[in-house]
Length: 393
Ligand SMILES: *Cc1c(COP(=O)(O)O)cnc(C)c1O
Image (cartoon, rainbow, N blue to C red; front, side, top):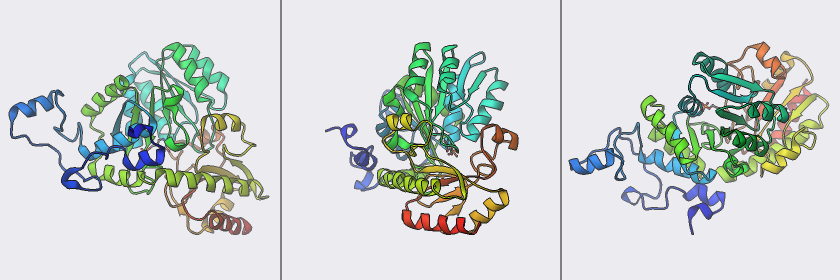
């Protein structure tokens, strides 16, 4: 009975911690040590050369971080996982480790704001050719991939307008080209979507969001095929963007309830989306679980739940948005997402703060758009508050 054969809720609790831990601890100890000491030079050398199991220095490996990596690895169904100091560290290290001058990478216009900056500023400076395609246009994405590329970088659902990409189709086209596919699975979580089972080579997360789930730790993780992840591991070893043992502990503690939280957040987001879609002061609602979403069928095929994120625009201007947001109780007006607390914010100060107003407009992000990350509060309470705040407009 291998842990990988268990259901996600069991994996989230037990993976990486099935063996007895130090001192018989029932929870993963925080191993707060930079180096690891050896009495015997020969054993030290064997571990340092990778011929024996063990730890040398926490920029390479750390036992607490290792448990976090193992939990993520099994949840996503990959061969190897490595953790990072943040989601952006995972993304930048993955791209920089696999791309060289002259390579071509295909991605989408709607990737996370920080990721877009890497595509628009950093990679071109290094002589890497970047093609960003209209996210909702599956045919255009496949056509660009078919022109040949080293790497395909996808994200679905996207931030903040919840666009959906048909992963199986895009991945199949990439495989025909021998291109590496990377999917940012932060919004969906492995509870709702498992890109590796659809043929993706690597999947990554901002663990700061749903994996940790409590807005108290930053982290990132990359999971996928052994040789590809190993290349990134070697890059991380040198560049040093490692996850700290303490953050790994917080993320591990959060992950034990990942399945519980995400299932509830899926239900709450569906109820909130339906409420908003029926409200006269709401202009549009973006949620892949709504039948009116243009890619609802694709989402239904590749996701087992539609997620806890949605966005909507109110019928009015930015002043009205400010009044509306000011009237909400029991939500944090804050960046980030995927927490037990409900969070709300416009993209201009959250996901797309790195972009100019023109760039946001090009992405179809209106100035009255709000991103809403459902927490684990009571759904009826959240809807009542939204209703009262909309009533003041
Ligand atoms: C937040 C986020 C990131 C960046 O992660 P950090 O942990 O903030 O560095 C990347 N992708 C998505 C989809 C995100 O939501």
